[in-house]
Length: 235
Image (cartoon, rainbow, N blue to C red; front, side):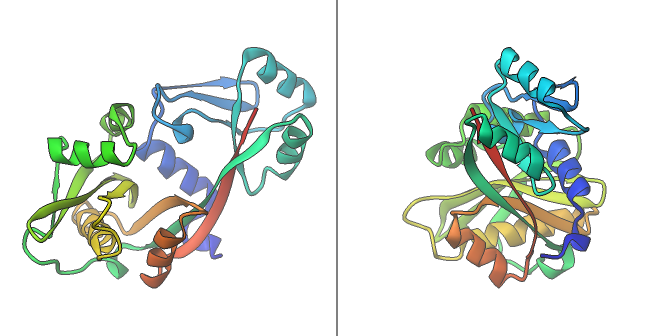
């Protein structure tokens, strides 16, 4: 891994800005989030300061049952494991300079738009990215766009991309079943990089579950570098 490409604190900041919770508040050393049904990433608490066993007791009493565990949270990870919290969805973060990912794409191979077209919403819904997660996209304050890809004159995939400072982050990449492994994912990523370059970003990042080996193979082939990892603990 090459943390210098995207430091963990910066990764967390960009992720929060480009995929924001509906509400966030502090409970002692923990930042808690309400994702309003938008998935784990916007619903998990995270540790921001030194903690004690009493802090964990308070979280238990309040019913917090999902914690994002970063690579530096080894003691917290062990403490939650001892309390019976199980590991869920290990995640790997990737990043690359935007200039390394941009490409000339055929006309109408993919195009950016906002608000999302109904067909983009339908493609997301087919992959389990429903209205609550689209609402996460709508909460983003900075520049953002939906991108739809086409293959053979058919809508083939959709992705969301947003910029925070000079960083852009990609979310909700979905390719229609039956059209996968035909280059649609790469087209979406290249189109997102093209949008990011036009929006003034110099780096593009994303996160993907560790078990998604097909997507990770694509990112590696495009010379994106693994820059971090995290997982969740669920009570």
